[in-house]
Length: 48
Picture 1 (cartoon, rainbow, N blue to C red):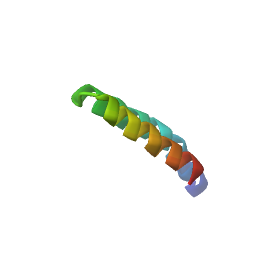
Picture 2: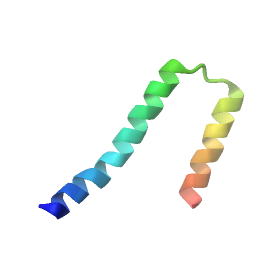
Picture 3: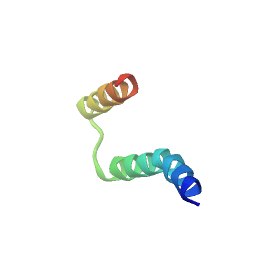
């Protein structure tokens, strides 16, 4: 059962990240600078 919960947890991480990002996009006004920072952060996380 523990392996099943691990799989569910790791599979839900992208969903949680997308959900939080969508909620922040609704609340925050996305400027060009903020968009640039977020894209640089995403590139950093991919190559980290």
